[in-house]
Length: 175
Image (cartoon, rainbow, N blue to C red; front, side):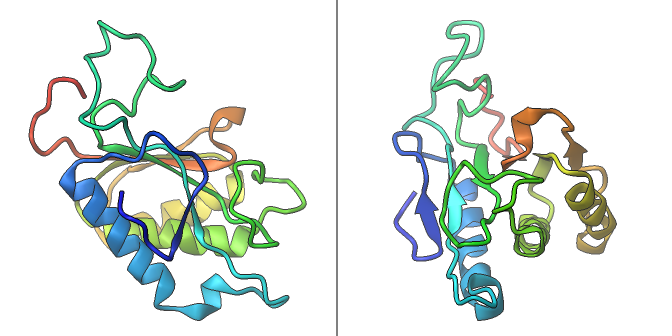
């Protein structure tokens, strides 16, 4: 993943992705940067998109050979990415989560809407927790040509980040 002003890399070491994943992220960054309203809140706090793991460079062995990669069962071939929710204070972190005092629901909704818009027909699924956020995104799915890509994860696994999976366009068997 090339450096981009819209992103803050919360984690390092797993920043490789398929060409269409990197294109998706670059377009998402451009869309985020194009509207200053979503970058800066009423207190003047700027927020970059907190980027988590994509994949290790070149992908990794198939699931049956290595059970987990960097704590993930997925993120093996560059079609999965974690993007953390937006904090009220603009600090890119994995520590803000749905329901916490520093969680910015309005800007996280906008980030989710942009994910649906930029993902066009490439999105396979988006896992996220938080009833208000999931309800909002489910109303936006069809607006952007999607059907059932938003998956509600009520558990603690996805309350602090979107887990986005793009379609495996090249049929890579390690995915």
